[in-house]
Image (cartoon, rainbow, N blue to C red; front, side):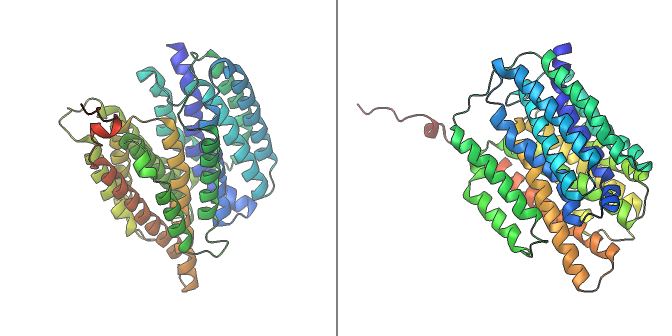
Length: 411
């Protein structure tokens, strides 16, 4: 029991970090004078470093678990120190990337390709996701974002110690050669940079089409199993919403960080609740399909968001989106690698839509609040497209058994 709980600590820290920093971002941007893309990099640098390095480091595992845990904890602590001392957005982003790399090491030391352990192993990450926005709101209320990063030092020690207490896992031995795995990591970083920098570099909406084309050429949906693709879809939508919703509440509706974090609980608590309940639903209920429909309805409401949208409508939309994503996650039960990649790419793509739509609206003379609301709406459109891709993967006919086995010899 203790070992399974310890193994879940690094993943819980990932979820705490993403949810807390998302609520702190408006304050961070104000203090450092960050642009919209700079603020997005504070989240994306952490996620892309984690997603790119985790599958590479998970190959080590086994006898090198202690070295991975120690190196990961040191990198996490060093990244936290860089973040605390940062006086520019670039320095903060560098610290965040270092934190993400360290977290990848700590997670790979305990998780291998997939984190298991039943309820004991899932309770802590679920609690972290559900209540992370509230913790972020408490820090944001006092403008304590540097205090949060100071807390990253003892949290790094906790992650390292938990990795040492966790049961030993066998190293991942995927069929993909190491060179292709490194190419995957490089490609993930390149696509993320292309998306996040689309607006600052003047690439426009073409960057989204180019990124989609690169992913299509890689045949990502065809190579991933349906549960893995659904996990990537859920993680991408959830990461995008965690970024966008606090931006809207704090910069458009002028809510405090605490109130923004409390309202964000409608998304995270709903997601965790339906994920936990999904295993109790009768098998005849198409859980994944029901979840995709619920999430799509919630996101469709967010498309029409503006500066005067009623809070009851916003709460209902976030609750529906969170409930749907939780149901899909419960049905998927996939590996960590596609989920981490989906979170990094989903945030990058939604953030690109958010930035580009804002820029177009400002060029047409719209106010800042109206432009930001429009950006959230266009990001919701992109997330709906991602859910549609998930639906296609869900109803994709299974490969015939004959394609997986060599044909029988003719007599």
